[in-house]
Image 1: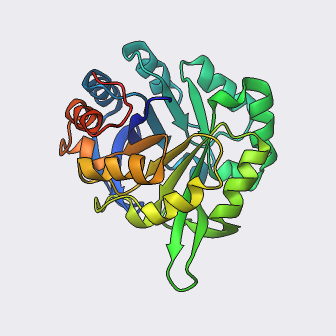
Image 2: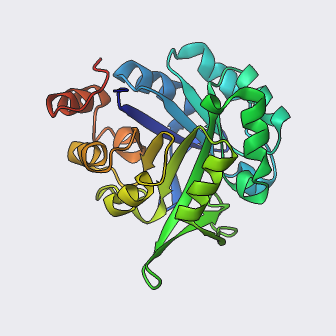
Length: 258
């Protein structure tokens, strides 16, 4: 059995780490490199960096901080933000990232997933999916351009259908960003995670809602996700990564303990 992963998420805007609630009202958390170092030292298994306005601004993630992060941490990290071509991805990987993640660009051109997987291998191609539960229809809908409140919009994709599609096209991993739960710290959407786990045959990462160590345990135990991504509980030092992993190990979760 592969060890479960704890993954801090660092949303980047204008060169700094920020955090919002339900993808809105972002506050500045701090500088990128010191936070990356802190999480690596605390025992994170991996880091994810989202340049949240790159796609909506029509640009690629700023690669200068990618190389600085690569110099100071010794754990894998993934970078996302406006990656629209094989060349964009190649530059980011060359600057030191271990994986690249695409979201809105994949929705605009699904063939990008296949081209990236063919060039660099499925192991480093992650597809991020921003999913919103619509209570009226009782369905999960995929959204795009979520880094910009003014441009955020629903797509025609149901989350379940898009998960199936990206796997067929070569996604090596899926991060499910559950927008309803984002930043509110009342637990992951276990119902959604279980539903998507049943059709997801590549590593599935839960994102959105972690507030307590028990929330991480539920995601691993009840929904069988491969990794749990969180931001605000780590940024605000509500949960220490080392202590979290010790707790999970004591509860029988297969995890790398620091």
